[in-house]
Length: 402
Image (tube, rainbow, N blue to C red):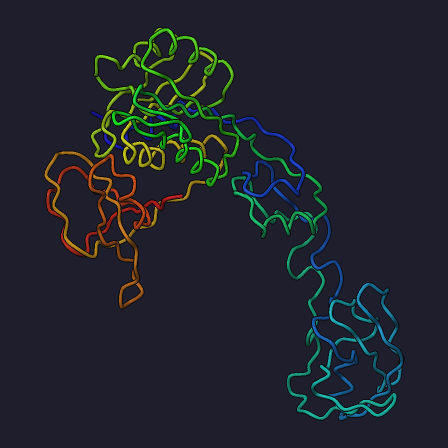
């Protein structure tokens, strides 16, 4: 069987990039940027005053002048005033205002005392040099410079930059329409009566919530019973309508696991089935004739949830054009023994060590059906298949739950 790295490589090679679209800036949070954001003018666009006080010439201070005449008051948003030619001239100034013409230094209120229109510098003047408390024009970025590169998932920081540069809309990846399908006759909806031989649907709720939290909110839930003609009919419509299909359950070798044969019959090309990993060994991946990726996850809740994080979310980020983010590396805080020749996706709880290193304490669930066992964990580490003993301090890649 494939290793997780080999499976991920095949997934990435067969997932087509999502289309691009213009998105209003107010709705762009969480979307993946596909076109660079450039400065439309110098940033800041003028010499910007950074504190309240008095604008004057640093040369006058150097020459020993300590008492100044206030010529006017300039607030933020006003055009620049002209500072008089006299050495003792100053202009009262507010934070965010443009630097008055002729001034090159700001003295804060706290360093002065005032009597009418006369201001006296009380404190030391060693720090009050040319450029003090002035955010120089273009010192952040010059016009035309790239500030935000494609591949970034937009947060408030990038949106602030885009707004400052006049971008009413930005080019982002389209938000894919995702179908999440749970399968099995034993499943009932939350509000329905549940018999002793039945369980409530939880996988599709968990997968949809996780996808939304990761930046893919356009998700619809479906349920397929283990009835061949129902699977055939609904699957055909879902494959035709949605951009991504995520299935949980029905992909193993059970007598009523009709999905693999039905996917094949509907011309969904199987790329692989089975990965040397636990949980999630039966994981299936394929693509339709129109390049729609189909992820068929095991039905056990922990397996489905883990495979979603290990393969589906990275694949969606890749198709969105997001810049790759390598997993964090953590150190095991307790020894682990795992004998099967499989990669082990081990839930862990994170903490900081005495030298601020990131430690991972194993926190495995009871079984792959124990969804509640993941509650206290922060994510999972991926341990390779070859060793059976992993001592304290073993380094491993960590992926957080979304």
